[in-house]
Image 1 (cartoon, rainbow, N blue to C red):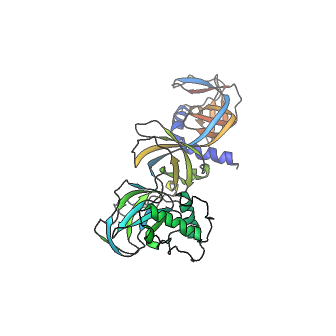
Image 2 (image 1 turned 30 degrees about the vertical axis):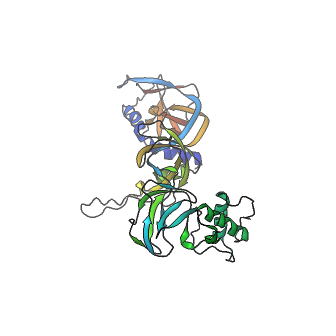
Image 3 (image 1 turned 120 degrees about the vertical axis):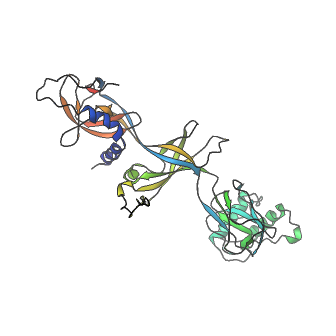
Length: 367
């Protein structure tokens, strides 16, 4: 089976509701001759046309923020003397919290700080991360740093410039950083919850803060039957509550499916229904400025493909065919077996792969 036909099959499931009108319309008995008896329901007509059909998948989602991060303390134990409030954001070089009034600062990178930074240390990916941050913050104005895995004299000089920006006097500028002075995270942090109250004691490994990135995102659960039709990079329209729709882009399609347990709390647990299994879908969006929406329910329409120059009829023209499949009733009498392709639920159209020709007229339930 071709990919196009698989897509059509998947989307046909999604449009079961629009087809209900067609199925009810098909309930009247078929004639044994070419004479068509008077219809038991009011009907109209629609022309078979050539056009463009956009394939879409619709799911519900939640608007929030991308990522989930925990900030663990790696320095000496002590009393937490300052911490941010929920909703605060900390960018590159900013202070995350203070222990015994000693600040712990944020740098960007995926490799966690696992040792002290100093001249003479062995090469490593953490050194590259540090140098990338020092250059990005402007502490290598004469471009002496070669961003690589090696801690050089230029790296130490850039750290001294960073120390000077803290207000540290020259005699205390070391050109070194201890493991507990910096935390690497993949993105700037939006604080969701301080995990330790100011005045509490923290030690190595204590989770001080939890948060997300500052990037807005929609998370949704995609039916596994539709997973093959949605891809990273697909364009998305997100309908917000009490606001105009916004555009987005699929950034991740999960590979691990989950299904509801079926345990309702009454009696023995029911077996999971594999047809209800879903995978997580992540969508990057840009929310209009000033919008404070968080954890808001949204509707997501993913554009999964476009088919041009195909035969189109209204979905409501499809009739259930005895023995399986579909047929349509031609205007003026007679029925024709048809093979549907892809469906577009949003416009109510279906592609006809076989059975009709451009310009023919079919019956549809009267609106």
